[in-house]
Length: 130
Image (cartoon, rainbow, N blue to C red; front, side):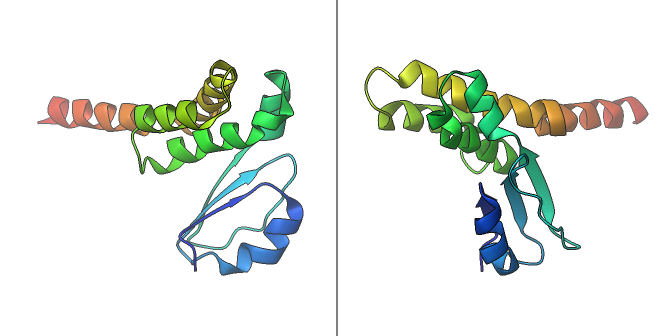
């Protein structure tokens, strides 16, 4: 059973959502998928298709989602994933794909907050109280 489930279509969500662990993370395309949330599961939605369209190419929707996934999970450092994206996309599309990645990351920070900033703020509060 997956710890993290990324879903970009209603059909995929309907078919596999029950497989997500009870304490898993659901990452979804919020304009196309309207999942039901289970207690204990955390869910994060992004309008990745709309964001890709705003960049001029719906084809980069998957890279928008990669950026969002990276921001949600923080499994791998941002720069490392950006380099992997840059190295894996067709020549001549690097700039567009990096913009797509950054748009996904920035959407997470705008909508859900930057965990690093929250941690810094909590440390400052703790220091002030001490």
